Length: 538
Image 1 (cartoon, rainbow, N blue to C red):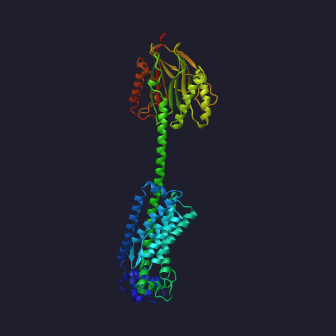
Image 2: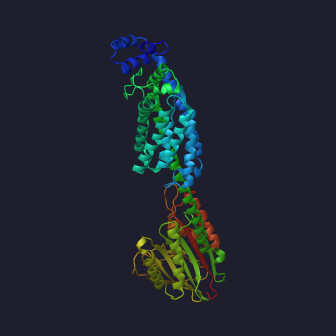
Image 3: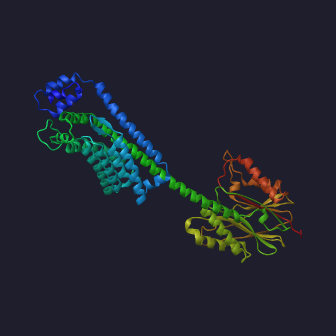
């Protein structure tokens, strides 16, 4: 056999491997090894390594691309990443990876009758994706198909493939591993498992099932101690060919196969992690879509509650102008004019802390409370106290509050009674004097304290006088230099345009704000309500 293995068909490196590992006790072995060291063609050996790796990389790339394209489907991602697979989902996973393991078996590299590939990593991956059942099923499919392909390694490779799925399934079951748990640490562990499992495959299963049975054979395998050429007799393969094929397979395939199965595991787990991330993204997109639909509905409801000029009382004594711009889809500002009786009207503007749905809900509640309590009391301070009690009872523990300016105008007497709850003061423009009076009172935010006290003042409105109610988003609007619009600029604008109809006055204000801010994005909701009084008895 020494003469046979020294045949020129076999490279010096293979011969050295044979003498060193297979016949280390042969008295001629050291001399043979020393002589052969000078004959090694390292370039030829490396080329064979690279050729093997190139072919395996091609298959891994093709398999990875296929899995990636299939995984773009939301249905596939949902089934693969499901916490508990349905019967249909499990069948789909087994079918998909069963086809993959068959293709992996077909895409083989034949080394003197030994058919090698990355089939084991597919069985392991099946267990990771679908759990123990998928790992066992796909491993069984791959094992049966590999056995039917024939070759002197068919039984050993088939058993190794089945055991790969079985062992991986057991690990998944014991550790309760799920695709969501894929990270650098778990990926490294699975890669190490796939790498060293090929040692089990090539150094245990192939000798155990491929060359076991009859003692006294020509080659004694160091790794297992089994003597073998029985399988070669069953398959009618010449013993020398059988022995030489085994040596070449161990020498040339052990490291490339281990590396490629590890690399394939990295590729598969990376794609699976991508599917997990995409599944989370899809869920987030669905949740965002639902939230957006709900926000749009809430916005439409809120917009329906915010009046426009046409919604205000159409009477000769009063003219109205208003504008509302929410920072988000739905904001925290509210204003309105309520008709209490024939001659009395209540004016309200409020600003709830924060933005979004909670603030919008509080604005709706506050409007209802002001409307309800305004009909039962002609004292603005008392109305504010009652509203504060109701708001605090509902949201006091949530940290929300609102500022508000509320007043009652008697058209017959011209008396305007008002109460301020931490809101920017209303601006009263006297048409005759062309001056501004700030309407303000002591009073804390509504909803902050259960027993807050509120106060009221009164003023007489004359013919042509204008009231401007606004939220802090107006006077705190900033330009690119971070300068605020300021209340003084608002006062001057009102004085300069006091003769205009309130609608035109509001348009002038909005235009001036845009000019000042230079279209800088707003930092808060902006609301303004202007009223002009026309008294018949003046």
